[in-house]
Image 1 (cartoon, rainbow, N blue to C red):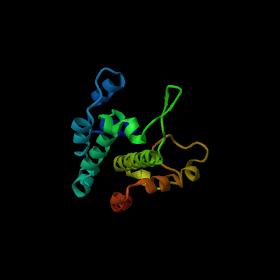
Image 2 (image 1 turned 180 degrees about the vertical axis):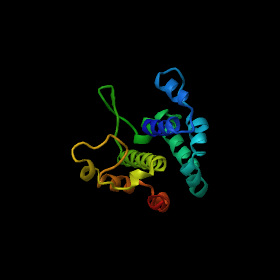
Image 3 (image 1 turned 120 degrees about the vertical axis):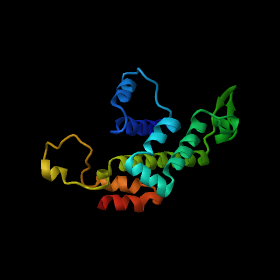
Image 4 (image 1 turned 90 degrees about the vertical axis):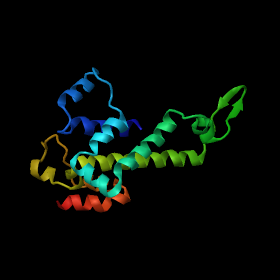
Length: 177
C-alpha cells in the first residue's frame, strides 16, 4: 500500500501542473502528505494520458478501490480483516500464541503484491511512456550512460509484462505515438 501511495504522490508532486512549492514543502516535511483519493488521484486524472485512460478504462475508480482494499488490511478494518481471521485460529504453546500461516493467506498476499506492482508499473508508464520502449543505452553511451528514466534492452520487457491485461492495448498504442 505504501509503495502505491508513494508512487502516486510522486507522480502528482512532480507533474508540471502541480506547483513546485507543494513538492518542496512535502519533501521538507513542512506540509502534510496529500490525501490519496481527494487530492492525488483527483488531480492526476486531469493529467494528459491519465485523463484519457480514465475516460476509456475507468482507471481512477479501479486504483482507488484496490488502494482502499489494501488500507482495510493494513489498518485492520475490524476483526473480519484482522490477522486471526485471515489465517484461521492460532496455535498455543505453553500460553504463547503462535500464528497459523494459511496457504490461502499467502496466495492472497502475493496476489495483492503482484497487483500493486502492476498498478505501480502502469502508473509510471502513463507518466513516462518511454519506459515501454527498449533503448540501446549501452551501445550509445557505453560505460557512461546518463542517469535517467530510460530502460536498457530487456528492462522495458519486464515492465510491459507487468501492465494489467485490461490496459495492454492502450499501452501498445502509447508505444507507437
